[in-house]
Image (cartoon, rainbow, N blue to C red; front, top):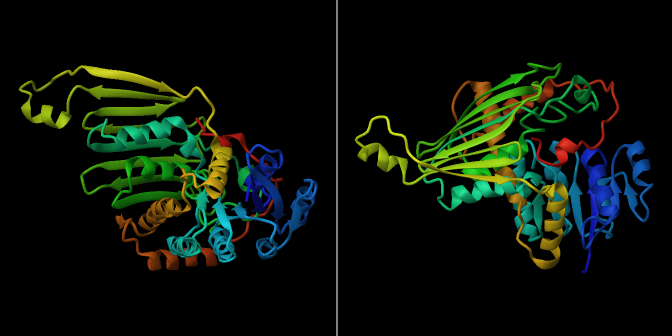
Length: 388
């Protein structure tokens, strides 16, 4: 194989954008050979792409023999079943975020991936941002010392009511499986655990329809607790304008702040824990070494993930965003919902998936499809790169 032949399931906002980038040759050693969508109008648009087969049923695309890999860009609930079908047919799989809606479904998907031995990736495009990569490095190599606290205010995911009315499945429990935590903030939830690690417990409040006429949450606050005493606070919303995207992480050697395409690093000459118990001065002022890292180049974003995935299939390149990692973000959001629904702290690592699934099922039963009043907005630049 000298080229990866891609098929895309779902020709909506993101699927159509991936298709156009593949078709125009923006991904080296990759080509688009097939597209699938249940919507006749979208299939008509896809048929305008030269030399691309168009399918209505994803199973036919998977069995067609004209693709080596599939990109899944459908509503969230369909990610695991389509991936499982594709792995069963011996295909490589790159799924859009989130990995699914329920941890229990994602476990089945991960098991199918392991059994197949194929390349499995997820579209965590913000992992390509050099500032987030630098933050992870500073935590992992001990530069910040012992991690103490993460605070992320990510409220610049603003959406109007017309956005939610652009598709019948949007902002419904039956169609989307959640709100801001399932649609906009998965990237940030992934980066939280990718940089700082998974918390042991979560306590959260998820406010349903606080700023919009929707049946899912558009505002959420999550508190994470770690066995070593570290904590995390994650605040997100689609109802604030202009909103904020500010990540601050503190450790025993200093802190870092990421905002507006800059990472500001403040380092002590030693470890605060040692100063605390050995310094006779009750109100000291320590010298800080300050460094600034700026994002001077555009992040490769989705195209970077697709290129990395293509290289993994052809040449064994290490994945920046392995598909197996998708379960971590889903565990965070599932735990947040369960905490909000029950009013209790919830274990992330020993999540009660049966209880979560049963409570979600009740919400699905009472869910109603949205009246589609506005046309699909198409691919949005703020979803393509990090939204500062």
